[in-house]
Amino acid sequence: MESLIAAVREQDEAARFLVWPGDFDLDRGDHAGEGHLASGAALESFAGDGAGGTYFFCGEGGEERPILHADSEGGAALAAVGLPELLRLLLVAPWWRDCRTFTEEESRELAAEYLEDMPDLEARRDRAAAALGLDLPDQAEVLARLREVAVGVGESFVLAFPPEDQAYAPLVKN
Image (tube, rainbow, N blue to C red; front, side):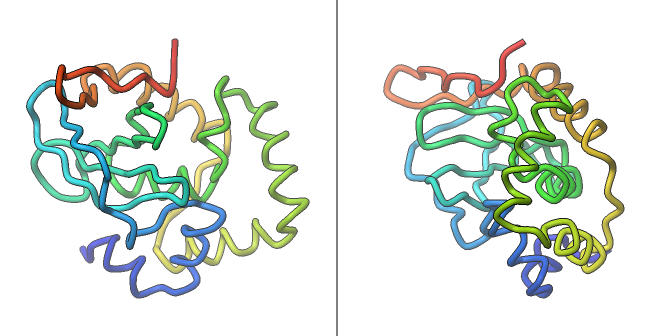
C-alpha cells in the first residue's frame, strides 16, 4: 500500500483541500516547541496548521500510529489513530477544532459557515477523498470517533514541555 503522505503530495486537489479548509499542511511539520510525550514514547512532527499548530505521530511505526494535534496556545489532544482516520476527519469536518461539544448540531452550524464561504466544499471534499482512495463516514460517525479518541485513548498521550515537564492543556474535556 502506498503511503498516504506520498498520495497527498501527489494529488494536488486533495493537498489543496487539506491545506484549506482542512488547515493541514505537510510543509509545516516543524514544531516550534520542545514538547515530548510524558510517557517517553517517540513523538514525530509531520504536518502543521496555519495558526502554528502541529500534528505528531506518537510512538514507533508508520502512518498507523496515533496522531496528536498541539495548538500554538499550549493545548493538545489526540485527534486520530492513524493517518487514514485523521484525513477522514479533516475531509468530513475540517472545523473539528472548533467543535467542542462533538454534537451534530454544533457541527452543522460550523459547516454552514464554511459552506457560505465555500459553496463547492462538499464537491471538492468528495474529489479529494476519491483521489486518496478514502471512503468517507458521515459527520456523526466522525465526531463520535473523535470524542472516543480524544477523551478515551488520548488520556495515554499527554504532551509535556520543558523545563518542568508541564503538560499541555487538553483541547478536549470530558
